[in-house]
Length: 518
Image (cartoon, helix red, strand yellow):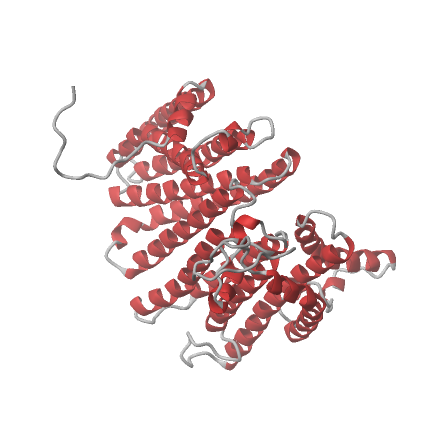
Protein backbone atom coordinates (compact mmCIF):
# COMPACT_ATOMS: atom_id res chain seq x y z
CA UNK A 1 0.00 0.00 0.00
CA UNK A 2 1.42 3.35 -1.03
CA UNK A 3 0.89 6.69 0.63
CA UNK A 4 -0.72 9.75 -0.88
CA UNK A 5 1.12 11.29 -3.79
CA UNK A 6 2.82 14.58 -3.09
CA UNK A 7 1.09 17.56 -4.74
CA UNK A 8 4.51 19.09 -5.47
CA UNK A 9 6.04 17.75 -8.65
CA UNK A 10 9.65 16.94 -7.83
CA UNK A 11 12.21 15.87 -10.45
CA UNK A 12 12.81 12.14 -10.40
CA UNK A 13 16.40 11.02 -10.06
CA UNK A 14 17.16 7.50 -11.19
CA UNK A 15 20.45 6.01 -10.10
CA UNK A 16 22.65 5.05 -13.01
CA UNK A 17 22.73 1.22 -13.20
CA UNK A 18 26.35 1.33 -14.37
CA UNK A 19 27.30 3.08 -11.12
CA UNK A 20 25.50 0.41 -9.07
CA UNK A 21 27.22 -2.39 -11.00
CA UNK A 22 30.69 -0.84 -10.76
CA UNK A 23 30.44 0.01 -7.06
CA UNK A 24 29.18 -3.47 -6.17
CA UNK A 25 32.12 -5.01 -7.97
CA UNK A 26 34.52 -2.51 -6.39
CA UNK A 27 33.46 -3.25 -2.80
CA UNK A 28 33.71 -6.98 -3.53
CA UNK A 29 37.16 -6.57 -5.02
CA UNK A 30 39.85 -7.42 -2.50
CA UNK A 31 42.38 -5.38 -4.45
CA UNK A 32 40.47 -2.13 -3.81
CA UNK A 33 39.97 -3.00 -0.15
CA UNK A 34 43.62 -3.98 0.15
CA UNK A 35 44.79 -0.66 -1.29
CA UNK A 36 42.62 1.28 1.16
CA UNK A 37 43.88 -0.74 4.13
CA UNK A 38 47.48 -0.34 2.93
CA UNK A 39 47.06 3.43 2.70
CA UNK A 40 45.60 3.52 6.21
CA UNK A 41 48.57 1.55 7.52
CA UNK A 42 51.07 3.80 5.74
CA UNK A 43 49.39 6.95 7.04
CA UNK A 44 49.27 5.65 10.62
CA UNK A 45 52.90 4.51 10.64
CA UNK A 46 54.10 7.73 9.01
CA UNK A 47 52.17 9.87 11.48
CA UNK A 48 53.45 7.96 14.51
CA UNK A 49 57.08 7.99 13.29
CA UNK A 50 56.92 11.70 12.46
CA UNK A 51 55.46 12.67 15.85
CA UNK A 52 57.92 10.47 17.79
CA UNK A 53 60.86 11.90 15.85
CA UNK A 54 59.80 15.48 16.52
CA UNK A 55 59.08 14.80 20.21
CA UNK A 56 62.70 13.79 20.77
CA UNK A 57 63.88 17.33 20.01
CA UNK A 58 64.41 19.84 22.77
CA UNK A 59 62.26 22.55 21.20
CA UNK A 60 58.82 22.37 19.62
CA UNK A 61 58.63 22.62 15.85
CA UNK A 62 56.13 25.38 14.90
CA UNK A 63 55.77 23.99 11.36
CA UNK A 64 55.20 20.36 12.35
CA UNK A 65 51.62 20.33 11.02
CA UNK A 66 52.73 21.70 7.66
CA UNK A 67 55.46 19.09 7.29
CA UNK A 68 53.12 16.22 8.18
CA UNK A 69 50.46 17.55 5.82
CA UNK A 70 52.93 17.69 2.95
CA UNK A 71 53.86 14.07 3.61
CA UNK A 72 50.23 12.98 3.67
CA UNK A 73 49.37 15.05 0.61
CA UNK A 74 52.20 13.43 -1.36
CA UNK A 75 50.90 9.97 -0.48
CA UNK A 76 47.35 11.00 -1.40
CA UNK A 77 48.43 12.48 -4.75
CA UNK A 78 50.42 9.45 -5.83
CA UNK A 79 47.84 6.93 -4.62
CA UNK A 80 44.72 8.61 -5.99
CA UNK A 81 46.12 9.83 -9.32
CA UNK A 82 47.59 6.46 -10.25
CA UNK A 83 45.26 3.87 -8.73
CA UNK A 84 41.78 5.33 -9.34
CA UNK A 85 42.18 6.35 -13.04
CA UNK A 86 44.08 3.14 -13.68
CA UNK A 87 41.41 0.98 -12.05
CA UNK A 88 38.55 2.77 -13.84
CA UNK A 89 40.23 2.79 -17.23
CA UNK A 90 41.41 -0.82 -17.05
CA UNK A 91 37.95 -2.17 -16.24
CA UNK A 92 36.35 -0.18 -19.04
CA UNK A 93 39.06 -1.19 -21.52
CA UNK A 94 38.34 -4.86 -20.80
CA UNK A 95 34.65 -4.30 -21.53
CA UNK A 96 35.58 -2.65 -24.83
CA UNK A 97 37.34 -5.78 -26.07
CA UNK A 98 35.64 -7.92 -28.71
CA UNK A 99 34.92 -10.74 -26.27
CA UNK A 100 33.24 -8.46 -23.68
CA UNK A 101 31.03 -6.04 -25.57
CA UNK A 102 27.68 -6.99 -24.04
CA UNK A 103 27.49 -3.69 -22.19
CA UNK A 104 27.84 -1.78 -25.45
CA UNK A 105 25.39 -3.66 -27.66
CA UNK A 106 22.99 -5.74 -25.54
CA UNK A 107 21.60 -2.92 -23.40
CA UNK A 108 19.01 -0.18 -23.49
CA UNK A 109 21.42 2.27 -21.87
CA UNK A 110 22.59 5.18 -23.98
CA UNK A 111 26.31 5.75 -24.58
CA UNK A 112 26.08 8.84 -22.39
CA UNK A 113 24.70 6.82 -19.48
CA UNK A 114 27.50 4.28 -19.82
CA UNK A 115 30.26 6.90 -19.82
CA UNK A 116 28.66 8.91 -17.02
CA UNK A 117 28.33 5.75 -14.94
CA UNK A 118 32.00 4.87 -15.38
CA UNK A 119 33.12 8.41 -14.54
CA UNK A 120 30.77 8.75 -11.57
CA UNK A 121 32.01 5.47 -10.15
CA UNK A 122 35.58 6.76 -10.31
CA UNK A 123 34.54 10.02 -8.64
CA UNK A 124 32.84 8.10 -5.81
CA UNK A 125 35.96 5.98 -5.31
CA UNK A 126 37.97 9.21 -5.21
CA UNK A 127 35.68 10.51 -2.49
CA UNK A 128 36.20 7.23 -0.60
CA UNK A 129 39.97 7.66 -0.81
CA UNK A 130 39.76 11.25 0.38
CA UNK A 131 37.49 10.28 3.28
CA UNK A 132 40.19 7.87 4.43
CA UNK A 133 42.71 10.73 4.49
CA UNK A 134 40.44 13.35 6.10
CA UNK A 135 41.03 12.39 9.78
CA UNK A 136 44.78 12.52 9.24
CA UNK A 137 44.53 15.87 7.42
CA UNK A 138 42.49 17.28 10.33
CA UNK A 139 45.14 16.00 12.74
CA UNK A 140 47.80 18.07 10.97
CA UNK A 141 45.84 21.24 11.76
CA UNK A 142 46.05 20.40 15.46
CA UNK A 143 49.85 20.15 15.17
CA UNK A 144 50.05 23.86 14.15
CA UNK A 145 51.83 25.40 11.20
CA UNK A 146 48.96 25.17 8.68
CA UNK A 147 45.52 26.74 8.35
CA UNK A 148 42.22 25.11 7.39
CA UNK A 149 41.57 27.23 4.24
CA UNK A 150 44.92 26.15 2.77
CA UNK A 151 44.14 22.49 3.53
CA UNK A 152 40.73 22.79 1.89
CA UNK A 153 42.05 24.58 -1.22
CA UNK A 154 44.82 22.11 -2.05
CA UNK A 155 42.54 19.12 -1.40
CA UNK A 156 39.87 20.52 -3.72
CA UNK A 157 42.54 21.13 -6.35
CA UNK A 158 43.74 17.54 -5.98
CA UNK A 159 40.18 16.18 -6.18
CA UNK A 160 39.47 18.11 -9.40
CA UNK A 161 42.74 16.90 -10.93
CA UNK A 162 41.94 13.27 -10.11
CA UNK A 163 38.47 13.71 -11.65
CA UNK A 164 40.04 15.09 -14.83
CA UNK A 165 42.42 12.12 -14.97
CA UNK A 166 39.44 9.75 -14.60
CA UNK A 167 37.89 11.41 -17.66
CA UNK A 168 41.17 10.92 -19.53
CA UNK A 169 41.36 7.24 -18.49
CA UNK A 170 37.80 6.58 -19.67
CA UNK A 171 38.53 8.34 -22.96
CA UNK A 172 41.66 6.24 -23.57
CA UNK A 173 39.72 3.08 -22.73
CA UNK A 174 37.07 4.06 -25.30
CA UNK A 175 39.52 4.22 -28.20
CA UNK A 176 38.66 1.62 -30.87
CA UNK A 177 42.19 0.26 -31.15
CA UNK A 178 43.89 -3.01 -30.36
CA UNK A 179 45.01 -3.94 -26.86
CA UNK A 180 48.72 -3.52 -27.61
CA UNK A 181 48.20 -0.10 -29.19
CA UNK A 182 46.05 0.96 -26.26
CA UNK A 183 48.71 -0.24 -23.81
CA UNK A 184 51.30 1.84 -25.65
CA UNK A 185 49.14 4.95 -25.50
CA UNK A 186 48.40 4.35 -21.83
CA UNK A 187 52.08 3.88 -21.03
CA UNK A 188 52.97 7.16 -22.71
CA UNK A 189 50.14 8.92 -20.89
CA UNK A 190 51.28 7.38 -17.60
CA UNK A 191 54.79 8.80 -17.89
CA UNK A 192 53.29 12.16 -18.81
CA UNK A 193 50.93 11.90 -15.84
CA UNK A 194 53.86 11.28 -13.49
CA UNK A 195 55.21 14.70 -14.39
CA UNK A 196 51.75 16.18 -13.76
CA UNK A 197 51.64 14.51 -10.34
CA UNK A 198 55.05 15.91 -9.45
CA UNK A 199 54.15 19.38 -10.69
CA UNK A 200 50.85 19.38 -8.80
CA UNK A 201 52.41 18.08 -5.60
CA UNK A 202 55.27 20.57 -5.52
CA UNK A 203 52.88 23.35 -6.57
CA UNK A 204 50.65 22.46 -3.61
CA UNK A 205 53.70 22.50 -1.32
CA UNK A 206 54.56 25.99 -2.54
CA UNK A 207 50.98 27.15 -1.99
CA UNK A 208 51.04 25.78 1.55
CA UNK A 209 54.39 27.44 2.32
CA UNK A 210 53.12 30.81 1.06
CA UNK A 211 49.84 30.51 2.95
CA UNK A 212 47.38 30.47 0.10
CA UNK A 213 44.49 30.54 2.57
CA UNK A 214 45.35 34.12 3.51
CA UNK A 215 44.79 35.40 -0.05
CA UNK A 216 41.13 34.52 -0.43
CA UNK A 217 40.15 38.18 -0.60
CA UNK A 218 42.43 39.16 -3.53
CA UNK A 219 42.36 38.66 -7.29
CA UNK A 220 45.86 37.13 -7.03
CA UNK A 221 44.09 34.03 -5.70
CA UNK A 222 40.77 34.08 -7.56
CA UNK A 223 42.33 34.75 -10.96
CA UNK A 224 44.45 31.55 -11.06
CA UNK A 225 41.80 29.60 -9.10
CA UNK A 226 38.98 30.42 -11.54
CA UNK A 227 41.30 29.77 -14.48
CA UNK A 228 42.11 26.34 -13.07
CA UNK A 229 38.41 25.55 -12.52
CA UNK A 230 37.38 26.68 -15.99
CA UNK A 231 40.26 24.84 -17.66
CA UNK A 232 39.46 21.61 -15.77
CA UNK A 233 35.76 21.90 -16.63
CA UNK A 234 36.50 22.44 -20.33
CA UNK A 235 38.95 19.53 -20.49
CA UNK A 236 36.53 17.17 -18.74
CA UNK A 237 33.67 18.25 -21.00
CA UNK A 238 35.65 17.60 -24.17
CA UNK A 239 36.91 14.22 -22.93
CA UNK A 240 33.41 13.16 -21.89
CA UNK A 241 31.84 14.09 -25.24
CA UNK A 242 34.67 12.39 -27.13
CA UNK A 243 34.31 9.18 -25.08
CA UNK A 244 30.55 9.12 -25.71
CA UNK A 245 31.15 9.55 -29.43
CA UNK A 246 33.69 6.72 -29.51
CA UNK A 247 31.23 4.13 -28.17
CA UNK A 248 28.32 5.40 -30.27
CA UNK A 249 27.30 3.42 -33.36
CA UNK A 250 29.48 4.30 -36.40
CA UNK A 251 26.38 5.05 -38.48
CA UNK A 252 25.38 7.88 -36.12
CA UNK A 253 26.46 11.48 -36.53
CA UNK A 254 29.20 11.15 -33.93
CA UNK A 255 31.13 14.24 -34.99
CA UNK A 256 28.27 16.71 -34.42
CA UNK A 257 28.27 16.81 -30.57
CA UNK A 258 32.06 16.61 -30.46
CA UNK A 259 32.60 19.53 -32.81
CA UNK A 260 29.86 21.69 -31.31
CA UNK A 261 31.06 21.19 -27.74
CA UNK A 262 34.72 21.56 -28.68
CA UNK A 263 33.95 24.81 -30.48
CA UNK A 264 32.11 26.17 -27.46
CA UNK A 265 34.94 25.15 -25.14
CA UNK A 266 37.48 26.65 -27.52
CA UNK A 267 35.66 29.99 -27.60
CA UNK A 268 35.29 30.01 -23.82
CA UNK A 269 39.01 29.31 -23.42
CA UNK A 270 39.75 32.23 -25.75
CA UNK A 271 37.39 34.70 -24.06
CA UNK A 272 38.09 33.85 -20.41
CA UNK A 273 41.67 35.25 -20.36
CA UNK A 274 40.41 38.56 -21.74
CA UNK A 275 37.74 38.69 -19.04
CA UNK A 276 40.32 37.95 -16.38
CA UNK A 277 42.47 40.75 -17.74
CA UNK A 278 39.49 43.10 -17.50
CA UNK A 279 38.46 42.07 -13.98
CA UNK A 280 42.07 42.15 -12.87
CA UNK A 281 42.27 45.85 -13.73
CA UNK A 282 44.39 45.37 -16.85
CA UNK A 283 47.49 44.99 -14.71
CA UNK A 284 48.30 41.42 -15.71
CA UNK A 285 51.29 40.44 -17.80
CA UNK A 286 49.23 38.43 -20.28
CA UNK A 287 50.50 35.08 -18.97
CA UNK A 288 46.97 33.63 -18.90
CA UNK A 289 46.43 34.56 -22.55
CA UNK A 290 49.76 33.02 -23.56
CA UNK A 291 48.97 29.79 -21.70
CA UNK A 292 45.54 29.58 -23.35
CA UNK A 293 47.03 30.13 -26.80
CA UNK A 294 49.77 27.55 -26.28
CA UNK A 295 47.38 24.93 -24.92
CA UNK A 296 45.18 25.50 -27.98
CA UNK A 297 47.93 24.07 -30.20
CA UNK A 298 47.78 20.41 -29.03
CA UNK A 299 43.97 20.52 -29.14
CA UNK A 300 44.14 21.77 -32.73
CA UNK A 301 46.64 19.05 -33.64
CA UNK A 302 44.42 16.32 -32.19
CA UNK A 303 41.36 17.72 -33.99
CA UNK A 304 43.23 17.69 -37.31
CA UNK A 305 44.38 14.09 -36.88
CA UNK A 306 40.87 12.96 -35.97
CA UNK A 307 39.27 14.86 -38.87
CA UNK A 308 41.58 13.53 -41.59
CA UNK A 309 41.01 10.03 -40.20
CA UNK A 310 37.24 10.31 -40.74
CA UNK A 311 35.27 8.47 -43.39
CA UNK A 312 34.34 10.31 -46.57
CA UNK A 313 31.09 8.48 -47.25
CA UNK A 314 28.26 9.31 -44.86
CA UNK A 315 25.66 6.78 -43.78
CA UNK A 316 22.02 7.12 -44.81
CA UNK A 317 21.20 7.79 -41.16
CA UNK A 318 23.32 10.97 -41.32
CA UNK A 319 22.25 12.03 -44.80
CA UNK A 320 18.58 11.96 -43.81
CA UNK A 321 19.30 14.75 -41.28
CA UNK A 322 21.18 17.08 -43.67
CA UNK A 323 19.24 20.36 -44.01
CA UNK A 324 17.74 21.39 -47.35
CA UNK A 325 18.39 25.15 -47.31
CA UNK A 326 21.84 26.22 -48.61
CA UNK A 327 22.86 28.16 -45.50
CA UNK A 328 21.90 25.42 -43.04
CA UNK A 329 23.53 22.86 -45.33
CA UNK A 330 26.78 24.82 -45.31
CA UNK A 331 26.74 25.04 -41.51
CA UNK A 332 25.92 21.35 -41.20
CA UNK A 333 28.79 20.53 -43.57
CA UNK A 334 31.22 22.03 -41.07
CA UNK A 335 29.87 20.24 -38.00
CA UNK A 336 28.65 16.92 -39.39
CA UNK A 337 30.82 13.82 -39.77
CA UNK A 338 33.27 13.79 -42.65
CA UNK A 339 36.89 14.71 -43.31
CA UNK A 340 36.19 17.65 -45.63
CA UNK A 341 33.89 19.45 -43.21
CA UNK A 342 36.26 18.63 -40.37
CA UNK A 343 39.09 20.47 -42.12
CA UNK A 344 36.91 23.57 -42.46
CA UNK A 345 36.02 23.27 -38.79
CA UNK A 346 39.70 23.00 -37.85
CA UNK A 347 40.42 26.05 -39.99
CA UNK A 348 37.87 28.03 -37.96
CA UNK A 349 39.52 26.85 -34.75
CA UNK A 350 42.88 27.87 -36.20
CA UNK A 351 41.58 31.39 -36.86
CA UNK A 352 40.52 31.69 -33.22
CA UNK A 353 43.90 30.34 -32.09
CA UNK A 354 45.80 32.74 -34.34
CA UNK A 355 43.75 35.66 -33.06
CA UNK A 356 44.44 34.74 -29.45
CA UNK A 357 48.11 34.23 -30.29
CA UNK A 358 48.23 37.63 -31.97
CA UNK A 359 46.81 39.28 -28.85
CA UNK A 360 49.10 37.26 -26.56
CA UNK A 361 52.47 37.32 -28.32
CA UNK A 362 52.26 40.78 -29.86
CA UNK A 363 52.05 40.08 -33.57
CA UNK A 364 53.33 42.68 -36.03
CA UNK A 365 55.61 44.13 -33.37
CA UNK A 366 54.22 45.29 -30.06
CA UNK A 367 51.44 43.65 -28.14
CA UNK A 368 47.83 44.55 -27.64
CA UNK A 369 48.18 43.52 -24.03
CA UNK A 370 51.26 45.65 -23.53
CA UNK A 371 49.48 48.97 -24.35
CA UNK A 372 52.66 50.38 -25.91
CA UNK A 373 54.83 49.76 -22.86
CA UNK A 374 57.19 47.27 -24.52
CA UNK A 375 60.74 48.10 -25.49
CA UNK A 376 62.08 47.64 -29.00
CA UNK A 377 63.68 44.35 -27.98
CA UNK A 378 60.42 43.13 -26.53
CA UNK A 379 58.61 44.15 -29.70
CA UNK A 380 61.06 42.19 -31.83
CA UNK A 381 60.76 39.21 -29.51
CA UNK A 382 56.97 39.44 -29.64
CA UNK A 383 56.95 39.48 -33.43
CA UNK A 384 59.28 36.47 -33.49
CA UNK A 385 57.03 34.59 -31.06
CA UNK A 386 54.03 35.38 -33.23
CA UNK A 387 55.78 34.04 -36.36
CA UNK A 388 56.75 30.85 -34.51
CA UNK A 389 53.15 30.46 -33.36
CA UNK A 390 51.78 30.97 -36.89
CA UNK A 391 54.42 28.65 -38.39
CA UNK A 392 53.40 25.83 -36.04
CA UNK A 393 49.75 26.11 -37.10
CA UNK A 394 50.68 26.25 -40.79
CA UNK A 395 52.84 23.14 -40.39
CA UNK A 396 49.98 21.35 -38.62
CA UNK A 397 47.67 21.87 -41.59
CA UNK A 398 50.40 21.05 -44.11
CA UNK A 399 51.15 17.73 -42.39
CA UNK A 400 47.44 16.86 -42.08
CA UNK A 401 46.69 17.60 -45.73
CA UNK A 402 49.80 15.68 -46.78
CA UNK A 403 48.64 12.61 -44.87
CA UNK A 404 45.17 12.98 -46.40
CA UNK A 405 46.59 13.20 -49.94
CA UNK A 406 48.91 10.23 -49.42
CA UNK A 407 46.02 8.12 -48.20
CA UNK A 408 43.77 9.00 -51.16
CA UNK A 409 46.61 8.62 -53.66
CA UNK A 410 48.21 5.36 -52.53
CA UNK A 411 45.97 3.67 -49.91
CA UNK A 412 42.46 4.65 -50.96
CA UNK A 413 41.16 1.12 -50.27
CA UNK A 414 42.62 1.05 -46.78
CA UNK A 415 40.93 2.42 -43.60
CA UNK A 416 40.93 6.25 -43.39
CA UNK A 417 42.79 6.22 -40.09
CA UNK A 418 45.94 5.67 -42.15
CA UNK A 419 45.66 9.34 -43.17
CA UNK A 420 46.00 10.36 -39.53
CA UNK A 421 48.92 7.98 -39.03
CA UNK A 422 50.62 9.42 -42.13
CA UNK A 423 50.06 12.95 -40.80
CA UNK A 424 51.98 11.94 -37.66
CA UNK A 425 54.78 10.12 -39.52
CA UNK A 426 55.49 12.98 -41.97
CA UNK A 427 56.87 15.44 -39.34
CA UNK A 428 58.79 12.61 -37.67
CA UNK A 429 60.47 11.83 -40.98
CA UNK A 430 61.37 15.48 -41.50
CA UNK A 431 62.93 15.44 -38.05
CA UNK A 432 64.83 12.15 -38.35
CA UNK A 433 65.95 12.00 -41.99
CA UNK A 434 68.12 15.18 -41.96
CA UNK A 435 69.84 13.94 -38.82
CA UNK A 436 70.58 10.55 -40.40
CA UNK A 437 71.85 12.14 -43.61
CA UNK A 438 74.23 14.41 -41.70
CA UNK A 439 75.36 11.46 -39.59
CA UNK A 440 76.20 9.21 -42.55
CA UNK A 441 77.94 12.09 -44.35
CA UNK A 442 80.06 12.58 -41.22
CA UNK A 443 78.86 16.16 -40.92
CA UNK A 444 76.74 15.80 -37.81
CA UNK A 445 77.92 18.16 -35.08
CA UNK A 446 76.42 19.70 -31.96
CA UNK A 447 75.42 22.78 -33.98
CA UNK A 448 74.16 20.95 -37.07
CA UNK A 449 70.55 21.02 -35.93
CA UNK A 450 70.78 24.77 -35.30
CA UNK A 451 70.82 25.36 -39.05
CA UNK A 452 67.64 26.11 -40.97
CA UNK A 453 65.83 22.87 -41.91
CA UNK A 454 62.80 23.58 -44.11
CA UNK A 455 59.68 21.57 -43.32
CA UNK A 456 60.95 20.50 -39.88
CA UNK A 457 58.64 21.82 -37.16
CA UNK A 458 61.08 20.69 -34.45
CA UNK A 459 63.70 23.00 -35.95
CA UNK A 460 61.59 25.94 -34.76
CA UNK A 461 62.09 24.96 -31.13
CA UNK A 462 65.78 24.13 -31.51
CA UNK A 463 66.47 27.52 -33.08
CA UNK A 464 64.23 29.33 -30.58
CA UNK A 465 62.52 31.14 -33.48
CA UNK A 466 65.72 32.44 -35.11
CA UNK A 467 64.54 31.54 -38.65
CA UNK A 468 60.83 31.95 -38.04
CA UNK A 469 60.27 34.14 -41.17
CA UNK A 470 61.80 31.45 -43.40
CA UNK A 471 59.78 28.71 -41.70
CA UNK A 472 56.50 30.60 -42.16
CA UNK A 473 57.23 30.98 -45.88
CA UNK A 474 58.04 27.28 -46.28
CA UNK A 475 54.99 26.21 -44.28
CA UNK A 476 52.71 28.57 -46.23
CA UNK A 477 54.06 27.36 -49.59
CA UNK A 478 53.68 23.72 -48.56
CA UNK A 479 50.16 24.37 -47.31
CA UNK A 480 49.13 26.10 -50.55
CA UNK A 481 50.42 23.16 -52.62
CA UNK A 482 48.50 20.67 -50.47
CA UNK A 483 45.33 22.77 -50.70
CA UNK A 484 45.57 22.74 -54.49
CA UNK A 485 46.15 18.98 -54.61
CA UNK A 486 43.23 18.27 -52.27
CA UNK A 487 40.85 20.84 -53.78
CA UNK A 488 39.14 18.45 -56.29
CA UNK A 489 38.44 15.94 -53.53
CA UNK A 490 37.10 18.69 -51.27
CA UNK A 491 34.64 20.02 -53.85
CA UNK A 492 33.42 16.50 -54.61
CA UNK A 493 32.73 15.97 -50.91
CA UNK A 494 30.84 19.22 -50.62
CA UNK A 495 28.76 18.45 -53.72
CA UNK A 496 27.89 14.99 -52.34
CA UNK A 497 26.78 16.47 -49.00
CA UNK A 498 23.05 16.38 -49.72
CA UNK A 499 19.93 15.18 -48.01
CA UNK A 500 18.83 11.64 -48.87
CA UNK A 501 15.13 11.03 -49.25
CA UNK A 502 13.47 7.99 -50.77
CA UNK A 503 11.07 8.61 -53.66
CA UNK A 504 7.79 10.12 -52.48
CA UNK A 505 9.00 11.04 -48.97
CA UNK A 506 8.61 14.68 -48.01
CA UNK A 507 11.41 16.76 -46.61
CA UNK A 508 11.16 19.07 -43.61
CA UNK A 509 10.02 21.97 -45.80
CA UNK A 510 7.20 19.91 -47.35
CA UNK A 511 8.86 19.38 -50.73
CA UNK A 512 9.29 15.98 -52.37
CA UNK A 513 12.77 15.16 -53.58
CA UNK A 514 13.99 12.26 -55.70
CA UNK A 515 16.47 9.85 -54.10
CA UNK A 516 20.17 10.46 -54.48
CA UNK A 517 21.85 7.75 -56.51
CA UNK A 518 25.32 6.95 -55.18
